[in-house]
Image (cartoon, rainbow, N blue to C red):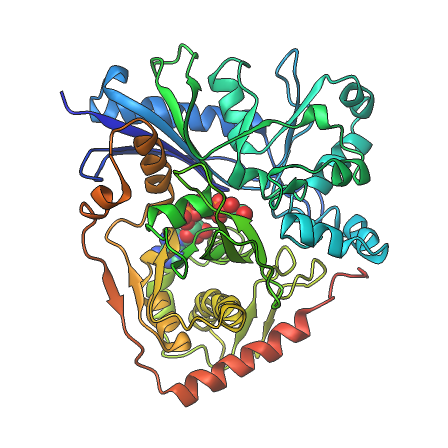
Length: 499
Ligand SMILES: Nc1ncnc2c1ncn2[C@@H]1O[C@H](COP(=O)(O)OP(=O)(O)O)[C@@H](O)[C@H]1O
Ligand SMILES: O=P(O)(O)OC[C@H](O)CO
C-alpha cells in the first residue's frame, strides 16, 4: 500500500489539509474557509473553535476523498498562520477569548508606550523583532488585562498560551502536549533567539507568567501521537512550522542566500542568512528557520500585511467580482492603472515602514477611472510592497538576488508575477506546486520519520517551475515605483487620530 504524509496548513482565511506521496506530489486536498471577525476598527479575531473544527474536518475529509486509511499516513506536519494568539484554560481546554489575529492593531498604543520607554533595543537584540502589535506578546498582555479574571487565573498557572500550532496540537493530543516549535516561538517577541529560550526579562516586562508558555521543540522531530478519535488514527506529529518558514523549507531554501516570497493573505519575503544571528539595518526582522539538524538557523524577513487580501477586499467588500482569480480578467480589461495607486494599509503597514497608524488609500481617481483601473492598482500594490521589502533586503545583505522564488495563492496570477518581475528587474520563478507551505511541513514530518532520507532526495522529486522575465522598460518601472513611494508616504499616520 502506498504511504503518505498528511500536512495541515492552517492559514489566515482557510484551513487546508493535503496528502503528499513519496514523489512529493499532492495526492489529495481539502479546504475550509472560516469567518473573520472585525469587532472594532483595527481589530481582527478568529474563533479558536472555528480554527479547530475547519482544520480537523479538512484533515478527515482529505483522507476520505483520497481513499487513504489513517494507517497509511506515516506522519503529520503542521504549518500555521503565525503570531495569532490564543489563551485557554488548562483544565477545561476552553479559550478565554477569541484568537487575536496577527493583523490586529489593538495594541498599537501599548507598543508606542514600550517604544517611548526605550525598550526597542532590548527587544531587538534578544528577539530579532521590532515592537509592533503584529507579534504575540502584547496580544497576550491585552487578554490578561481585559478578560475578566484572566490575570488571576494566569498567575495561578491555570491558563495556557499558544500560537495556532500549539492550539491544534493541544487538541489533537487531548491536552497532553503543550508545545510550539522554534519558528513559531520566534514570532512572539518573548523568545530569545540568540540564547534559545523564553526570555525571563521580557516576560516580566510584559507581565506574562512563564507558566503560560509552551515547551519549545524542533520543527522536524517526533513530538507525540494524535489521540482524537476523529478518524485520523494515531498518526505521529513530526513537523511543525510557522507557515512562512515552512514555505521557505518547502522551496528548499536551506542554504544561506536562498530566498522566497509567499503571496498569501499577506506577503512574506524570507532569506536564509545561515547560523549567525544578524540584525537588519533596514527595519527587516530576524527570525528562526526550520532545520533538521537541531541547530539554530536564521532568516531575514520582510513582512507585508496585506497581499492577496487586497483582492479579497475587492471581492467581498467592493463586490467587484465573485472569485479571487477573476481579478486578472478585470485588471486586463484596461491597459494600465491610469495613474491610480492603491495603498492597502488596511491593518497599518509592516516592513519596512512599520506604521500601525497608516491608513488604506486610493489616489489618482478621475472621472474616467473604472473598476479595471482599481483592480489593476490593487494587483500592482502587492508587487510594489514586495519591491519595498526586497530592496531593503538587498541593502542589508548586499547579496543581489538573481531570481526570486514565488509561491502562495496569489502567485497563480500571471499579471502579478509579470509586473513583479518588471519592477524588480529580475526573473521571478514560480514552482509547479504553489502549495509550498503545506509541502514544507510535509517535508519536515517526512524527514523526521524516515519517509525521506534527506533534502537531496526530496530535491530530485521537484518538477521545473515557470519563469517570468522582465519586459518593462527599466526607466518606466522606476517611475512607477517612485509614484508608489510617494503614495505610501501620504498614507502614513492617517489613523493616529480618528475624526
Ligand atoms: N488568481 C489570483 N489572483 C490574485 N489573488 C489571488 C488569486 N487567487 C487567490 N488569490 C488571493 O490569495 C490569497 C489566498 O492565498 P493563500 O496562499 O491561500 O492564503 P492564506 O494561506 O494566507 O490563507 C487570498 O487573499 C486571495 O484573495
Ligand atoms: O495565513 P498566511 O499564509 O497569510 O500567513 C500569515 C503569516 O504567518 C503571518 O505572519
